[in-house]
Image (cartoon, rainbow, N blue to C red; front, side, top):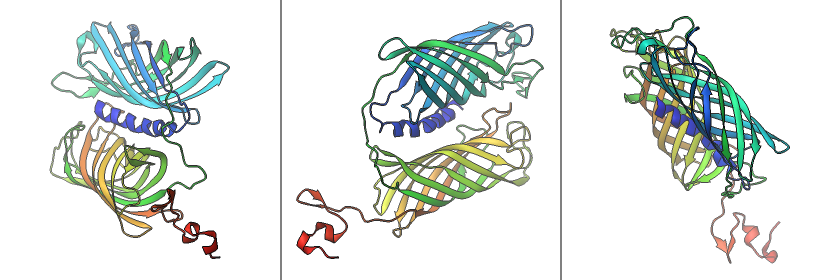
Length: 414
């Protein structure tokens, strides 16, 4: 669970971080401080107890005042005879503006919160993981050239449930069990500077492609999810746009996709966690979208181009997926390795292996999920004008693809 969300947050942050590296002297923000939560996780009315802890975060260099952000916080305390040991790993965006020397910001973070399994009253059993969100903002007051004092606060949401017993982990909630919290923090922000790494091209249309793709299951893992009895078939369109320069020798593209054709072949009868109860099967249609996507493609312009893809998004079904206690909507994570073959100046053939995961991230107490090994096959159509590339040089000057440019003035032809 934590690995999945951490990987998704790195994906969310990478585009902003890579694009910002082209800005002159772009700044990072590294924060550490004290934090508090307004209530315990078992804090029903009449027994509410705040929790204290630590918080650290990294905000990437800004792009149009928008920063990608990774955040880690931990909380400790005791309430109703039970320990409360929690931590949250979240990621998202931060938008900031300066008012004089002060910097104000707002943020939206999404991720996973972990909790000890005996947090219920009198150390009873409960969920150890839940989807969490945080919406808030704050103020930075500079105290030196690279340091500022930060005060921030906001609203945190979780959805932890109780278990009936340690041996029968059926999730349920009782009236008054909290899932809305206020969170406050104060500490120091360090803003180091980075050098320009890659200057963006100006007055040039970026390379872009449309990929008509098909994704089909042929095997399963059991790494991040419980269920492995279902198969997934998807089809749609991916858009790749060269937006973030180059990294590790690869062209870095923004790579969202829309998959309007989704068919989940699953067992018709399962328990709360998606375990099979009968041999009957059913097909469940759906739709998937991945607005967060990153593609790295090597040997750009060659006939054989290796690539790496990573995406995060949402998938929706017409009924609750994998379990009657699951969710209609689920979070997705895709990672793919493959090769793109040039067929013509406009068309490429793509083939790769892809890890496709989805689960609801404990948006509801039950969190069945699926880890699929899939094949990704597609046809890529290059958009825009197709121009010849420079090849070689003459007297140290790059050779133009147009003969009359390399010719002497007397050799120019109309």
